[in-house]
Image (tube, rainbow, N blue to C red; front, side, top):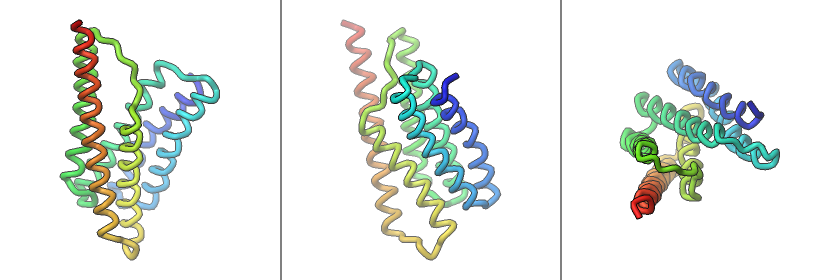
Length: 180
């Protein structure tokens, strides 16, 4: 087990800590753990590249860690009424569709390289920002800016949808190339 994969596992371990903090109303703690999780997301990939420690395990664990962190955070914050339900449905549905697509490709014995497109990386940043600002405005309500958070939420929704379609098109292309 290399350092990048350990960081990814650490991010997965942080998910229940973040959710328990949220459910206990400890938003400051949740922010700290969430920021640490976000930093490890960038750090694990960076270290894997510079240390030449990219692994198959890491290529599967990293997106799993991202999806677990994002889905759990959005669902918890949505249940608490902090993030709108419509945005949570979009975010979780996209991830479900991606996992469903990967399962279909696996069942069809179509090999695929798990490599996120640029739009997916931007989507992840917006999803992290949406959670981060939702938490910040819980801790510092005097700084709450309804217009700014609307922009972040809508940008998150648009990039999430665009990224979802990108994955669908890539999956269909893989299936069609296998048929030929």
